[in-house]
Image 1 (tube, helix red, strand yellow):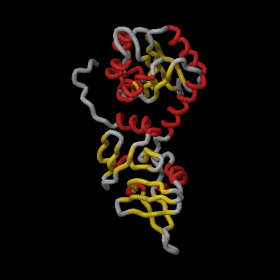
Image 2 (tube, helix red, strand yellow):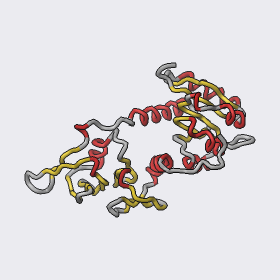
Image 3 (tube, helix red, strand yellow):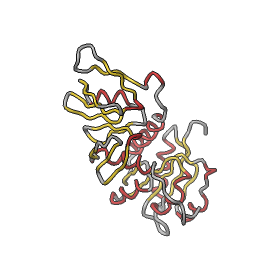
Image 4 (cartoon, one colour):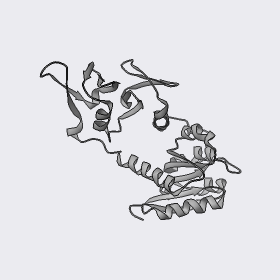
Length: 248
């Protein structure tokens, strides 16, 4: 199945399995490898050798919840997608490094859009080429330009029609918009938008406390509600946790 993503479904409701199976079959870039209606059987049978790209898993299941099961098998799949009728599990889902969260009933359009997001995130894993590692900005002084190296870029702060560009060397003001800077950084995984007025470098995050992000230059950035889901997904992926007590 070259070029296709291997999929596995875990859901105790057979009609839900059949529906997702139909959706997967309809997508030319997906292939259903196997499915389970018993989470305990999935715990035993799923192996790393299955080469799972996307695991679709229900949350409410008898014997073992999807949240509990994911702690044991998350490392056996590239992407984890929770499928449930309850929105109350959303925060817990991203706490176990879920990539997506689909609320039932799941339509074909909702499913296809989610797959498109996953494929887009995979294509964005490429690092920028050397000629994209820097750019120049024009300052408020006549004929003065400043070179901004992306590796030194800490954050971008929006100020109406201007932006503050925070770097390790200092701060510069440029007559640019957040949209223009975001387009320039598109595809570079080192940067993430965390608030309407802030794009930050993940390389310079010092700590996260609640909805406040502190960068290495002591700049405190508030985490916006719109961007919270994306940021928490990144945070969980980068959080080191102990596997002691978790069955293989």
